[in-house]
Length: 188
Image (cartoon, rainbow, N blue to C red; front, top):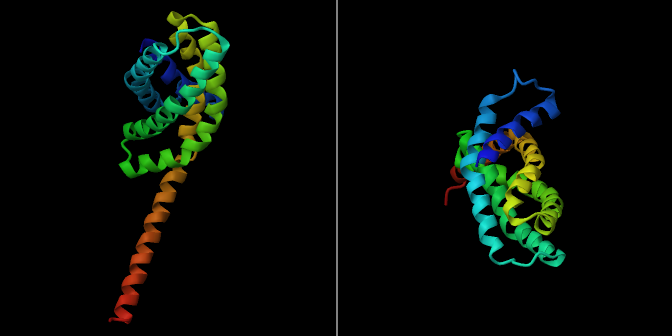
C-alpha cells in the first residue's frame, strides 16, 4: 500500500509532464490525489490479495509455470482490474454511474490490448526470476510504467465520453419527439 501511495500519484504527475510538459507547480494535484487514494486503498489491497491467493496454486518456479501464471492472470485478473480502474477513478471524479460505465466501454479494449503484451511479459519475468517475497516490489516497478500508461488512457478523450453521452441523449430526445409527433399526426 505504501508503494502504491507513492507510485500512483507520481505516475499521474509524470504522465502530465510527458504529455503536456506540465511542471510540478502546475500539476493537477487533485487528480494526483485521486490516483493516490485509488492506488493505495483500492488497487494495492486487491492486487496483494490476488498475488497471495494465486501463489498457492503455482508452487514450481520454471518457465512453463511462469508463462502459464502470466496468461491466467491476463485472462482473469487484468480485465477486472482495468474495468475497476476506469470505473473507480470516474466515481472519484464524481461522475454519474452512466458516464463511468461509458468510460469503461470506450477505454477498456484499447487498454487491454496493450496490457495483453505488457503484463504477460512483465509477469513471466516476475514469476520466473523474482523470489516470491520480492514479487510485489517487482510488480510495483512494472506498475510505475503501466500506471503512467493508464493515466494517459484515463486522460485521453475524457471530453469525448461526455460528448458521446450528450449526443446520445439528444438523439434519444429527438427520437421521442419524432415518435410523439407521428403519434399525434396519425392517431389510431
